[in-house]
Length: 495
Image (cartoon, rainbow, N blue to C red; front, top):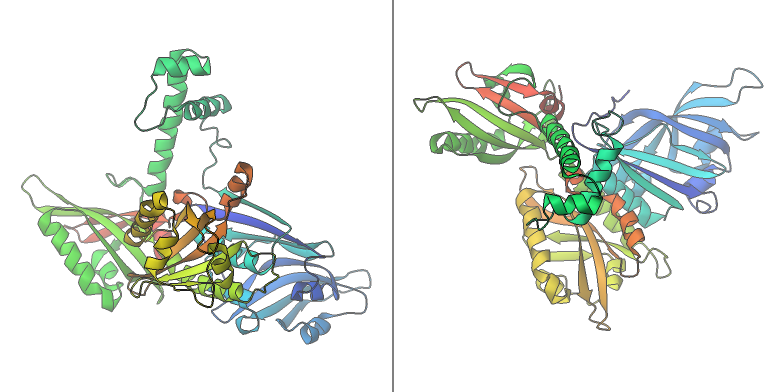
């Protein structure tokens, strides 16, 4: 059985539902001709070319697993684990295989292995209720591909945080109401133009009450932040100690020299360093792409004695590359009459400054797919002047920080001079060495959406915190030549 994933950072859960009518001309709709009900139980194996799952199935009268295996091309029966033992029992438990070569959507799932379907996912005569959970970037890319292929009848998304503020009674509902009122009144604007006395009058509470509520909430949020990233100034959050030489030996041979060079330069220059590299997971031969940010520490005489740092999981960037390639293919296969023409996918090769757009995105942007000139200069010419610099800045920030992004901007369509509002979501695709090589993502025309609908549409990728990878802390003792890892760092490195 493949073990479930453990994430140190924020987790996204997305639920999609397709009715029986919507599924009619799909493999899932065809499957409903043979079964009454199927429930996903778990994965038994996941690889780049296939996915094996365990599922509990109730067949329609007169049908069996052999009928499904023979008639549904994307499903291969691997093993019957349990069969009905009496005339009244109808449930089968099966191990079935979905081959990536049989369907592009299966390839999407096989590529995004950091996300997982949950056991609440079911297929019955009412339709398909599909729930996927995992890091926001990976989940977002899978959901994007699904929505391009077949628009769901219902869609919802939420964040599954390690700490629930209300559930754990860290702050009270009254305190949250005060914070919300303060936010709406402009208390947190930069620069702040509101005084505490003004805020108290706005909320209709005393200054001392408002100040107490705000201080309590802000203190709890800072504590949660420090708990989530680890306290770099102490060893209290460190969970396990390893020999430093062992950790150095786990760095990929091709990356060892640059990591060694930057670390030594940071120590010599007494400055913080950042480096992206591949490191072998603990007790495994698998390499993981990470980024470390570290600061050397010295004794009173100026001797180097320790290093404190953060490690960030960047593996989602490689997941995103494979998923978005498949999303591009799916989008390009849509027909002229496709009702999902408001969405398109794109890829931007940084070295060649070349943008590839799906046909649907060309239509959104008002360019002819046949004569489309896919270079960066042409794209910038489409952007309304007041949005040009913000778009360039967002692109440069994403490439520099290897971070996913989401933004809205206006374009002026060249075919009819019409101004449209575009929302783009994307992520940075890096090579094996961690260098940014391209940007990939989705774009949609949101001009006609209401404010409420725009908030709903934001659920795919979430805010910047949700787009980042998992973080963990570590501390190096240069005297004993050991390294201590926080629990989050251990999860990233895979103990």
